[in-house]
Amino acid sequence: MAKALVLKDITKRFPLVLANDRISLDLEWGEVLALVGENGAGKSTLMKIVYGLQPPDAGEMWVDGKPYRPKSPLDAIGAGIGMVHQHFMLVEPFTVLENLVLGLEPGSPLFLDLEAARKRAEKLMEELGFEVPLDEKVENLPVGLQQRVEILKALYREARILILDEPTAVLTPQEAKELFRFLRVYVQKGNAAIFISHKLKEVLEVSDRITVIRDGKVVGTVRTKETSLEALARMMVGREVVLRVAKGPARPGEVVLEVEGLEAPPRLRGVSFFVRAGEIVGIAGVEGNGQTELVEALAGLRKYRGTVRYLGHPLPHLALKVREAGVSHIPEDRLARGLVLDFSVRENAILGDQHRPPFRGFLGFLDGKAMEQHARTLVETFDVRPRSTDLSARRFSGGNQQKIVVGRELLRGPRLLIAAQPTRGVDVGAIEFIHQRLVEARDQGLAVLLVSADLSEVISLSDRILVMYEGRIVGELSPEEAKEERLGLLMAGVPA
Ligand SMILES: Nc1ncnc2c1ncn2[C@@H]1O[C@H](COP(=O)(O)OP(=O)(O)O)[C@@H](O)[C@H]1O
Ligand SMILES: [Mg+2]
Image: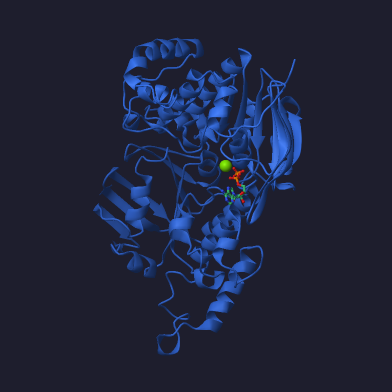
């Protein structure tokens, strides 16, 4: 039997990077193939080529044994390929049903197809064992359901090869499990799926085979049954990595941050907790449950109601004052808030402290020597590669950019660190490095409030875990208690 999909020597160059370097892989009917690799490895680029969103510079493809050269997604759909993107492509003010029909037959009036569409959609959902409210507007659906709409839309178009690009990034563990169950049913019916992720545990759970890519090249393909977490991690980053954080028990001291009845619109609806010196308190939760509001309120970037005490005194409401008081902040979006991409490392290394000694020198001019010295220390202590202080932040990989942010925030000697998604989108090597620095800082007495959508990060780093759901804290667990299942239930709003 012909293979579902064969790629041979697919190559794609962007101005700054060879994103796909002679990638070859194949997908059998009836299997889930996982495509794994660090951020920036070239996974999305490859799948966009398969889906006809961009042409390869070189290489060939076959679908079910036939040569395949898509000029647009319409060709991909015609060949039976469906894709669920990292960012959804639904029309939000439209209902689920309208979204299913939309764009399928250009020029045909929507309303004519709706009743027939409903019948087909219902049949599909029954066959595949999941449900979506067909008459609800997409904008009113939680992300987990929006993703199902994307899947349903692909199936509605008779996709026999389904590509899912980082589908679990927006899901709770339970929702991810349901997705995996669906994928197994889908391929058992003789279809095929490519599942992209950089989370190795789930890759091991759902796939039949795994293709690892690194720096645009295929490192290897392995059978899921014959590999392990450690072996995959090694393939992904090219060396052994410790996936667990080495840390002793916390020795908490005085209360550094005390929060009472903190409310911040639109989503933070009243939280109370404290963080002591020398401990890491993790906030777990699906994104969009008030975490962003919490972080921004504490960092002085957003208006709030309630009491926030820092070292026994009210915390100022102004970002600059919060910083001056000794509070550091790793923002969740390093590109928007953490770095000025066109500034050099030297400039980025003092962002937020540029008005203070030692950087503000004689007559208020910036002291170039102090800046250089500081940036040097940063790139060396935080292993920023390349070790340049002149290059603009834009020129560094995601992991190295994040090391610059983390280094800047830790080197200023804070008493409290608010760390929001501190390792989002960075490679395994950088994650390990950043985790170790955070634990070290904790051991030296830093109070850390960690907000992360990555459960394994919260569990491995935190000394105490608070779970947020719909703007409130719905539970506190120790990392030992926080079996992912229980934590996941709390995150989904099911009281434990
Ligand atoms: N449209 C583009 N223009 C320029 N560079 C791009 C473009 N798309 C992706 N890249 C670069 O190609 C590399 C691979 O990116 P991507 O395929 O998105 O990786 P992954 O999905 O594995 O995280 C990255 O270095 C990224 O910055
Ligand atoms: Mg990607």
